[in-house]
Amino acid sequence: MSKRAAESDKVEVPRKGGDRPEAMDIDDKTNEMGEFEDEFEDEFESEDEILEAGVDGRPDAEREAEEKEAMDVDSGPGTFIVGRTKLEPGQTLTPDPTTYEMLHNLSMPWPCLSFDVVRDNLGDNRKVYPATMYTVTGTQADSQKASDNSIMVMKLSGLSRMQRDDGEESDDDDDDDEDSDPILESKSIPLNSTTNRIRAHQTPSQDPSKPPTTLTATMTESSNVYIHDITPHLTAFDTPGTMITPQQNKPLSTIRAHKSEGYAVDWSPLFPAGKLLTGDNDGLIYATTRTDGGGFVTDTRPFQGHTSSVEDLQWSPSEASVFASASSDGTVRVWDVRSKSRKPALTMQVSSTDVNVISWSRQTTHLLASGADDGEWAVWDLRNWKPSAAGGSVAGKPTPIANFKYHTEQITSIEWHPTDDSIVAVAAGDNTVTLWDLAVELDDEESKDTAGVQDVPPQLLFVHYQQTAKEVHWHPQIPGCLMATGEEFSVFRTISV
Picture 1: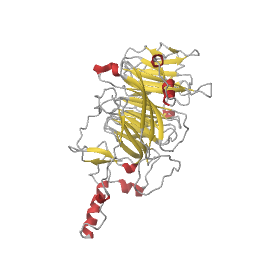
Picture 2: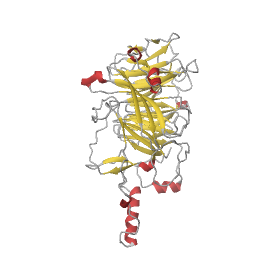
Picture 3: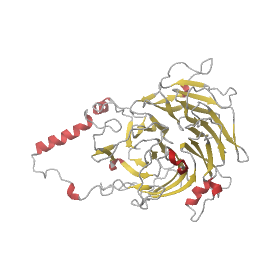
Picture 4: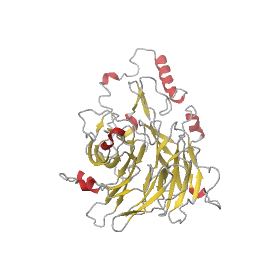
């Protein structure tokens, strides 16, 4: 989890999905792409700070009573719960390094509301340190400096394991350098609007000697959606001296179908060439398809049904013509793109508040997770959703197979583990990213041990503190590795997953 430290710091009020945070203070000595921070440097001054039991001169009984009282606080009403317990004046949170296998933080010139992890050619299921990963994000520059906005293609390398002082040996004998310094490289694509959400998609190359084509779709505050080819930018990281031309920074296509801005965008995983869904604040959803000639065509007939803004979209991982949408009207709807009516096949009222995000399980494809404005997230079995005779809707709220009201603010991101259908990552406006294991069930004896910690579900595995947490993604090729964005970026891997 996290621990509390008495340090002076201003705690900001969590912001909802579409709000733009203020620019962060950046040291003049940092480059414009951001910098890594070492939170644990010089944490312990010397070994003299560690006192051995029994050397303080007190009777054993007195010392043992104090130790017992300190242990009892973990199960009593005074337990500090990250994201719930209010910090006292002058206090802030710092991570407990013993709970992380890897943790790196990265500050940026401007906050980033959304990002995506880009698959690479370094191999799957890799556990070797130092780690390398590629990502793409979009900035949220101040409204007075819209021209400062950009898409940032980034390479993060030298991501080392946490240093251990417990004498334990590494499980990975192939680690080259656990103490290497992290390195950030970045390529910027100018964008004259803030990014609301960005998603990446890769098209396999027909030539085995060439990398896949990596496309990004960027939903912006201007209501336009920009599609870029960032393949040259990714290639440039590993080809010294490569220059990006102005032409390579221009979008391949600009979708102008939306009349209002939006936050919902998703590429189909079952359409390699590129098939895109975009949704806006007017409740309209458009489909854009890449043609054989490499261009993009947007169907001008929108999918209609939501009575408020479309907050998120997810293609089915198993059925090429099916997708789901979440809306601030409190519903999740399931659609078939082959429908001539452009109406939903299923409509479920899953919350009395805005449904901000959804995630479709890649492993068990009848499971869909949703996160709402009231801090509740739930898992639904789509096999239990049945259409009515008229309109494809069902009255009332269905019963989820699991639901949790742990978070105290809106859910801003949710994502299933890429290979484990019981693990879910959730980000929320209470400044936390939580990891959950839906397979956990306590027996009677274990229930007694946890009875003192109120309102903490046994399925909760881990809590990571992330100021103004906005989005979280699992790395598909590094097991257990996550990246989250908020006031800054965090790349971490816990010892619990």
